[in-house]
Length: 357
Image (cartoon, rainbow, N blue to C red):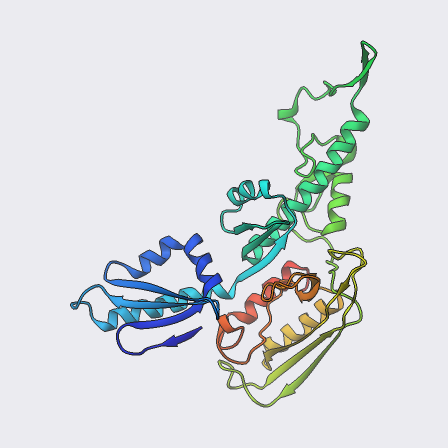
């Protein structure tokens, strides 16, 4: 984000997608921040996909210092939202978007011809992805179970199936959140977090991700879909990063060559475009810890995946996999750079969600 202070009015240039998200999900906070003494205008630039926020006094009695204070509060607020904002694509039907939007109000879901684009925090996007996957597993398991277990009877030479009446006490029984059926004692599996499921349902869910479908507690280590054959290297420089002037810089380089998609990718058998990326960490004790965690995550194939680029829109390319990297030395959070005092803490939380800590 670039700040412009050319007298009165005062300006701030922000990314249009981030501002759209803020207006949809944080409009009340935004209006409260402006108050009744400061007005704002927005100028959209289609070429750069940016918005110029113009802060102006309500009248001549409003001091310029008050306008500047509102601008600074907005900048801090914007940076906090932007630094934790993710974009991903999910495979859902258009008629599901409305229900999912109601169930996940902190996200913004945009229906697309095939699937939907989702914008929101990493934790909320993970919850949505888990919910979609578990519902898909539960539907298939429920359909198969009903087909196998429903008793058959004949009427007028036609075969019919009917549900068993053996579950008169459904309200008193525990329900599996995956298949939405009553959990039978013979197949009940209770995790250490005290949540219970059908053993078969949990086994299928753990194939996708070894976490509790209810609370997200991790059981094991995640395996990612990062293409094989890539390389990660780290080097040290004496120059410092903004906000870490006492330390040098760790430069992290990734190289993922192009190849053929496998079964765990969106379009098995099709080609995908590779990627080369460079990221930066402070050579501080905490920065060195993050470097080691990223090295572990890379070995577990968690750093990258194959999908649609959120910046170019290209499909079947290597993309980041929801672990934030600083790809710029400066510019702050909105330019994926420094200073950003909370970055090292945030990226460790993202890695922890994937079982790397």
